[in-house]
Length: 348
Image (tube, helix red, strand yellow):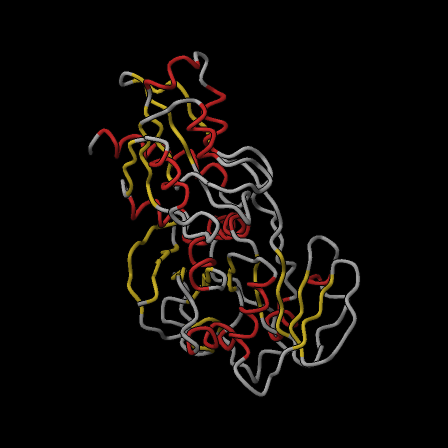
C-alpha cells in the first residue's frame, strides 16, 4: 500500500460512519497530512451540514500548516454553491497546494469542475487513488446520477434446498409466515434498512406477512416504505400504513394523498418496474432494498433492473413449496452468521 492509498483508505473509513445519513449527498471522508502526520480529518455527517473538507480543515489546530500540507478526499471536492459553499474554494482559500482525490464526482454540477478549479488555482491534483473502493463507497450516489434510478438490492432468505417457503402461492393464505433466518440475520437486515433510503414489497407479502418495514433491531432512520398494490387490496389497518414512516403506494387507481401516505398511479398493462424506478428517481430516492416475495423479486430480475443481491441460505429443509428466484450473477462475498450463510452477488 502506498502512502496515498493509506490516507485515502482512512478517508473511506471515516466516510462509512455516515452510511444512511447523507442522502441525497454522497459519503465523503477527508484527511489532512503534514510532514507524514495526520493533523486534521473529518467526514460529511448529514445533508445540510458541513462537508468533509470543511470538517477536516476546521479540526486543524494550527492553520499555518495548511499551505504545507496535503489534503486527501475520497470524492472530488464540490465546485458549486448548494446548502454549503464550494469545498474547492475553501481548499484554495487556505492555500493547500497538494490535493489527492479518490475518484471524480459524477454529479453534473461537479463532474470535473472541482478538479479544474483546483488546477487553475495552481494546485497539484492527483485523481484515482483507491478508485474502485471509492466508487464502491458511493455506489448508491453514482448509480442514481449515472443510471437515473436508485441502486437496487435484492434480499431474501431460502432453505437449504432452495425454497423461500414450504407453501405455494395457492395454499399460503391459511398458513402462518415461516421465518427462515436466525436472530443475528434479522438484526443485520434491520441495519441494512438503516443504510438504504427505501424498502419495497409487493401486495402478497404486505397482506400475508403484515410487515411494518421499519427499523427496530438497529439504531437509525426508518426507510421510506414502497408497496405495489394494483387494486388497493391491502387493508388500511395493516402495519405498512402506520405513521412510523412515509409510505408510497404504486397502484392503477387514482387516489388522493394523505399525511404520510402517497399514491402513485402507473400503467399496469406494461412494464411496471421501469415506471416505479423512474418515479422514485424523481422523488430523489437513491437506494432501494427489495424485501418482497418471489413474484416481486423476479420482476426486478426479469427486467434486469437490480445491482446487488444478498441471499441468506439457512439450515432448514422444506422439500417443497415456493422455489427461490433463479438468476445469473457474480458471487463476490460470503459470510457466516451462526447457522446462516450469507451470499453477496452483483448483477453481471
